[in-house]
Amino acid sequence: GESVGLHLPTLSVQEGDNSIINCAYSNSASDYFIWYKQESGKGPQFIIDIRSNMDKRQGQRVTVLLNKTVKHLSLQIAATQPGDSAVYFCAENPLRQGAQKLVFGQGTRLTINP
Amino acid sequence: DTGVSQDPRHKITKRGQNVTFRCDPISEHNRLYWYRQTLGQGPEFLTYFQNEAQLEKSRLLSDRFSAERPKGSFSTLEIQRTEQGDSAMYLCASRKGGAGFTEAFFGQGTRLTVV
Image (cartoon, rainbow over all chains, first blue to last red; front, side):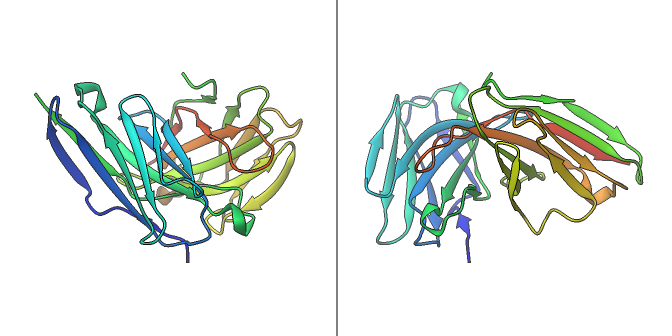
């Protein structure tokens, strides 16, 4: 069945350090993945996406890595800032199955320590 | 601000009452989604519209829930005979159509509390 899970529910890092948030997915038919950031009381905010024909994609201070062999996704945030504190969700879309929805994982709470 | 608007932002209702939420997607987006999110969990898919057609509904969407998108623009989600278990954040998202999946933009959500 579909499931998207995360290795760690919480992550604390020092301001200025790099952080890595991991995500495992189980649906081998998924071919599109998104990372969202959600701050308290707000809706999810798009960070970066990646398609299954890629294994790495970079944005501003963020990098997403996709390992299809082990069905693993990670989000790397460089030089974390206090504003990076939030819950981060990975989500997948099994488009090859004709699905038009995103399936979300539970989320990882990232805390930036001063 | 993503451009997806939801109203109201908060709703407190007594058990057994009906509630209706509204979502205004980004104007050129023909795909619209409703999700539900409970505390500490990721959003769960409820239903999906392509233009005015409701193409997919989750098993989470009981017969007390109904969603519409009459003109292919804004959408409403109604919950009849609310129960305490309906308390959650209800999120709306929209995206452009076309081949492949594209970035979905979420609204700020409507937080429902059933007392």
